[in-house]
Length: 147
Image (tube, rainbow, N blue to C red):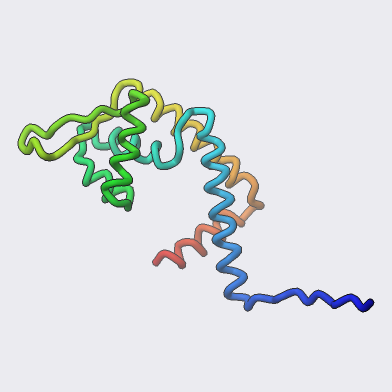
């Protein structure tokens, strides 16, 4: 019985580079999510808390959806979970009772601070894994891709 030789399928360099970039992005996201796990937050929850903490006022759910780059139904579910955890509260807008606002609670402010510390620590660890000069090169490459 003859064995078939397994030829490794080679992707064009550009395709391999893009897939490597996507794989690295997934790995970084997974590390950040894992770092947040002990806080009970996800990157999405922390982002909503960040928007509310920075705003220093209640924000319409439609604004949160736009800032989070998602549809209103997704932000509604996310705010539902945050509200159930006591991190956010909803209220009607004074000038338009049809509009729902979300505001961060004192518990949400504490969770936000704890989550930001965990995220910053994980980000430092990720960057520390790079060799000297690699962080700058990576930043330059990412800037080129987003301009």
